[in-house]
Length: 150
Length: 419
Image 1 (cartoon, each protein chain N blue to C red):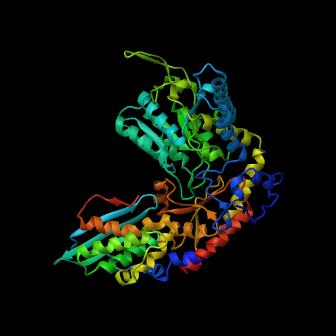
Image 2: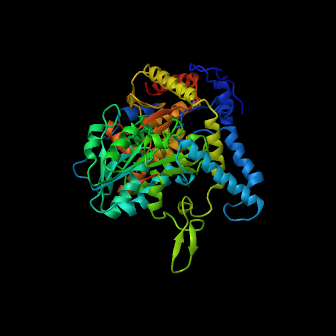
Image 3: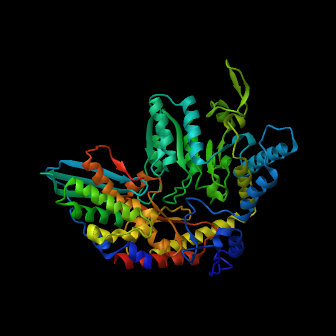
């Protein structure tokens, strides 16, 4: 069960149980919806960008522990950052979870997001971890079409 | 790859020699993640007996030629194997004539064929197509495409909380505008066995033909399309221990003769000029292009294998597994079974309180257990029961009570992760 403990880190289990920023915003400037049609994972993401930074962010959704914990940790990580910084973090996160078993997980850049390093050992679950980030990317690009990681 | 687990030699069902049956399926002796494979995803696809694997290999090694073409010996023997399998399938389904057996890729293509071809013939604006609430997407979407093109309407037979169709509603939904009923023999996500004979009789009493999606029916039940009274019956070879990519559409000859071709091409014509083409008689009219000949040969071998089994004992064993799994799974804290029809095949869908099905699937996979997780291509069913997804264990006659125990034990591991 060593691999499982890698995947379901305590941080992930905890954020799945009590997701942060699980809310709707009063005045969102950007929003997007993300679906994994084969899994049924779903994220509705709202962002308020003000003065060049992500002033507030909230999500609603349902799905597996990985997808929901990822949305929770992502919203916490990008709050207060500029959209460009959030996009850079997306790249770093994406590289970590898709990079194969020995891809570096830089804890300095990623902080708590490094909890998702174990996902790379489970190729079928990478899209669960990435869903929130793809949705963020779509919301910041102001692309109104629902996105899918399939 | 070897296994350390010894299959029990006998099942609780008397006369069913499990060890001998399991030895027919090479993959059942392999390991996954260092554990013996516990394959409980038979609803998605079944494993293949040695006889099927060998028949396909042997065909390519010694029998391969195109069919219905060459005048040489090899082509003649390939044609004989291809048409011989059609006769086997006709007997397997108890159709009247070989020409009522159309080779297709599987149930999906079979439904698309009927929706498109029968649809063009019979379905007009304002007409109704009657489906059921538990259909697989492959028995919904082809009809929706047809309805969009013609202006017809889709109507849905509702089900109760157990996952049984409401037959009084069904009767009311059969109207003078109903052109066809399309319903699953066995629900892939709930396991419900629908009362097809009764439903067919009711449809026919109103002059409406009925298509039965037999993807899950063929692997479990002894079939008789004449006794069922269905007009169309669809089969996926890979779910009944045959190869992937090959299946059968059974259709009553009177329908198939009246229906226009589905695809054009070689093999389905009588004569072609640029002005006018005349079509070949059944079944060739619906078999354009070079077919999956090796797949047909493999499917024929699967039929031989099934016919050679004691089907009553196989079904009895599956029922035993269903009852055992239902009882054992009920002991897992927070587990709810979705689909509790009185008449059920060996399929158990379930949800674990507070844990998404995909997490369940990943965790039990660590114990070598293969189950399906997700919506099972039945999103309307998931919506009806108010769940985003379920985990599903679907059993074949080669599964064992020990394997149910491995699943139940692995599910305890889910609680270890999620508390």
